Image (tube, rainbow, N blue to C red; front, side, top):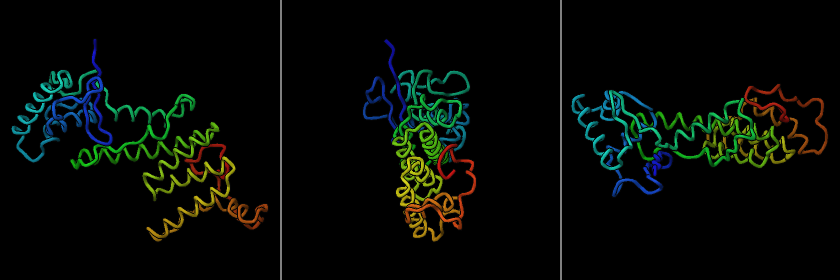
Length: 264
């Protein structure tokens, strides 16, 4: 009977075998760093792994540290790492939560993926990479993953709106804004969802809330693109009348606005 080994790097490091934590008392720190690096970087050659994980020691010492970490990993979780040849990788069949997250992100971003096949709630795109780790390679990958996740949430919101799934769309848009409160594209996604659903007052309220936060935190107004998104709808919400001719209408939809949304 085969076992299922899983490496978790989101919201903390963990290795499980058939659902149980691997290694009595947890894996040694050097093994954790090795496993995390392989989970993120695929199949690098040994010299690259040694130099990346032990950058402040001579190459010979770094290579010795790598051999020690590989031996400890094999002892704690047999079959976790494949160290045959000049390259090192996690063994085939080992599941990594970051890779699964990236698969979901790429599915959302791929226009060829039918929206009904996404089935991706906002929570499935959540998670911070290795919080509390400050290695340079972790910091770079953490920021890359964060940006990908935020963009995917915004795109997901737009695609769900087009499909008429407004409740899920607003959750995705607010998830992006919660992760990065000053990210204007996330707040534009929120406004578009409310407008698409016909909730003009909610759209105006969301715009004004973001405008106030932006003024308080950075001392700048929203972009012209966002101001024009709500210009005529704001007047309609306030007066209950059609928009006067003198009020400028929104410009054509920006590149990131999904087709068919009001104000786009």
